[in-house]
Image: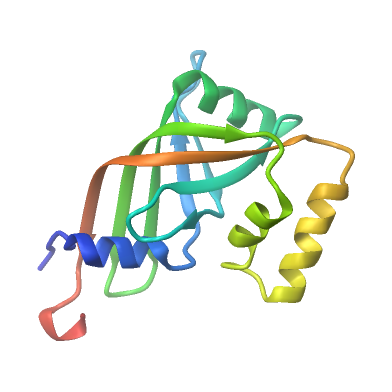
Length: 151
């Protein structure tokens, strides 16, 4: 049986180290831009992620700034399936993000030493200037396919 998650369940799920899929409206005849991202989230707070302003990252940054709103979907890929989709408003874009802001996100996905190396490489790269995007969750859509005893 499919049921909606409680607020506490969805916030706890979103706080886990899942890869999110970001979707933002396009500014031409193409469909919305949809890409996987690492993100940061603490229950009850905003969602943040970083991206760049050059190359393939530039389109994402431009579309996010233009639209001012986006959707993020986070899922559990094995049974019992669960997902949280967030529709939100962009409330800040910090350019460039601090090393600590980037580490807060990278540490969710990588061991400490690898997170440090990843952030150092991102900050030392003379290529794209980085942007930290902060999103306020406005609406939620959730589903939990677990049976009562599996929660």
